[in-house]
Amino acid sequence: MTPESLLILTHDDVLAERWAPLGSDWPVTRGADLSALADWRAQGRRLVLLDGQMPGLPAWHDPHWTGRLSGVDVLVGLGVADDRLGAAVLQAGAAGFCHLYAPLPTVRQALQVVASGELWVGRDLLTRLLRLLDDRPAAQPPKTAPDAAWAQGLTLREREVAELASLGEANDAIAERLGITPRTVKAHLSTAFDKLGVADRLQLALRVHGIR
Image (tube, rainbow, N blue to C red; front, side, top):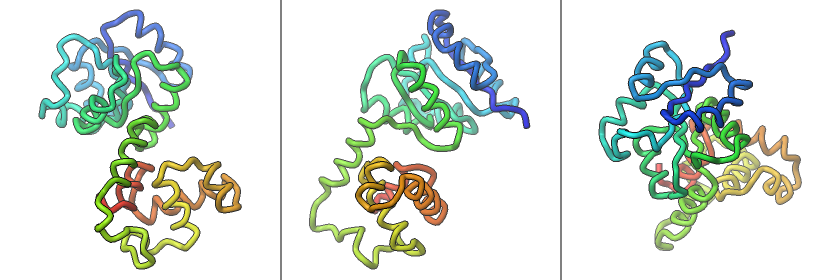
């Protein structure tokens, strides 16, 4: 099987050099403008690391981003740690964002998540989203009631794991709380994802909390 390839899209030679070691994980091609993104998609390739500070990039609220990012899995490097900007990047159709100069292991991990079809939103933004969910009016019926529609088809243990994961708990913490192994947590979570038709923890949280 041909390995997944990575398009590094930046005009900045220094940044391209910083990202060059990613070539040990994916065959790397470099582009310098958005035309390379269109060519990449036309070749049937998906994985892209995009410099969000490239000159001439449209604003992230530009509706044309939807078409540009359709059919590709794009991780955007941002020059500022701004959750509001990150949310706009996701809304534009990107699969994730991180700081432009994040440590290479973090960038590598984010790309692995994006390449697997999941979203990389960063812990801070996920925490803020979950806090917003927790701050909804208490008058709303709890989505974790015994007859909650979202949990139909899940076993009791799968439901317990899904509920804790939807609150941002890591696998190790869930395992300790439920008295099972992290490997078992991972297995239950994977099964819950399949049954619920979600791809990642963010989508799971939205489902559990009744947002989608």
